Length: 404
Ligand code: C5P
Image (cartoon, rainbow, N blue to C red; front, side):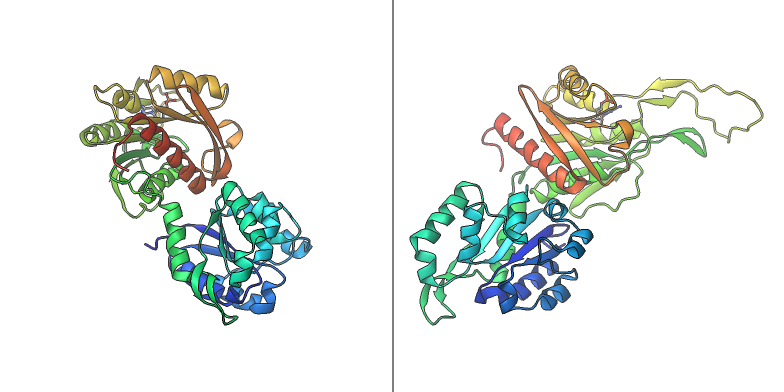
């Protein structure tokens, strides 16, 4: 698996001689598994043609903010939301100045303002321009606002001078981008995730289940692995491939899920229960297919074990994270669960009106004792990474000094 598998990179290219390296950069980003969409400024197009980057990225290159054709394909705000990271490489002195002043005078600058994901800039310019106090002040402003700077490197420049101002090589940029995602926040830790629905049999061909697709749990497992954890995924029946670098245990029923969890729970540092475990199972499971001879049949159901509750009630529980899918009074019910089940954290989602199940995106309200944060609607992959980053923060706050 490439170090950037499943990552969506919005690559901004500005007018610098180093723009020619953007072609190789796109190629290397894709080689590492990233999906790349390119935005070029007007002057970048003087150095390299959009066609080149279009062919290499496999997507149309965006150039204009106010082009209705381009906007109708994907609006600029959607484009900002689509990305997991914005990388501007090369970033010219002019672009840095525009960003420092919060200008939104072209598509790229607007996207950088609209992005709610990390923005990284790889400056490339003549050394005098780089060392100019104006540029240095702009860079400082940007860094204070959380924009990350990659480079520049020292060396020979296109203008014949030698000094700081060369863009980092594509290979180094790819490496730094990968490090940005895989902060190793969970390295050395064991994470167990439950995912998907369970199936509670009634007879050999029928069962009780629910609409969980398993996507959120799978995304959480993948995000935890990306953050460096050793991940075990205990999964109900779903139609998803097992994420790479995740050990999977497949189960059908709630009782099987409970047994699989309890068998493996020792040595788990963080337990994230994203499964939609069926609350009830049929008391009697017919060994033969039930015939439709009667006009009315009755099923007696009994309660399934609360897996999350059982894990959290252990003498030395792992850091436990629950999910709460609610159709009303989201906050109140989530906080009740946090306290009653003695959880460390709960991620609540509103499942009224088809808002979460079997959808590509989701939004979460996350609570812990004495705090909380809203994770706005986003693709489940992106949301899972944010949730895992929060889990890592809270875990390390609770266990200062443990593996990192
Ligand atoms: O109490 P409720 O079912 O709403 O709690 C939801 C949370 O508890 C989820 O994290 C779910 O994975 C977990 N759960 C569980 N075992 C059950 C029911 C729910 O682990 N039997």
